[in-house]
Picture 1 (tube, rainbow, N blue to C red):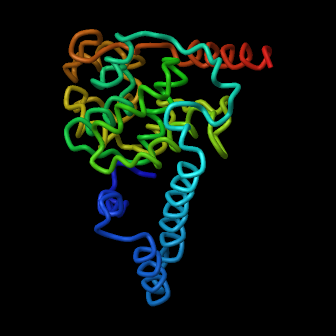
Picture 2 (picture 1 turned 30 degrees about the vertical axis):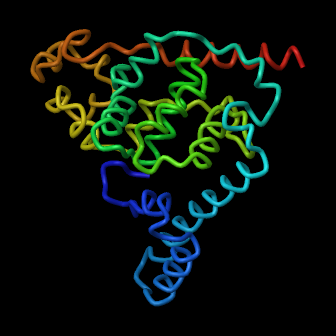
Length: 253
């Protein structure tokens, strides 16, 4: 869960392109875990295998429900009042939302074709719940830019985030990108790597530059609205808007 650390396998592209089979990966990890008694090995192996199972579940879903590529598995979300806002979508794709963790992830994606899974979830949640833009647009962008882009996993992940798929995250679970950054990038190293214009900000303010005192911003060379954008939305207001949209859908059922 820490994008600032090298803690993931980076095997997803090899699984996607068939260089490595899921069964091969499964048995290799089980063998490694059985032979290595170091602290944390069993927990790490379990976490990896759990993600591998999710991957297989996504392929199972796509096989049995091919329409989910474009339509929500839960039909009530077919009437969801998504917004049509090309400017907001552009802000998200370019990593200019004003929320550092989201922006760092989107810039990493564009530069490398890869993004840490935790940041993928936060960035996806921001698009569908903070900006209220259709999950299909985000899914299409990820398919176009991720080197490990997999139709089944991508569809499942976006529908999970949007709350309209199988075993989906509850719609009311709306990631706070500031708290996510402070929890999973506590020193701000990940943000500093991908958003160099914030590189001199102290860790206390790196995930919420708009709250930093003017003297701190000046000392770090940050001019909000110029060198780095102000937040595209207010978190509390965006959360309330998303919950109201869901309530409207439920009232029509």
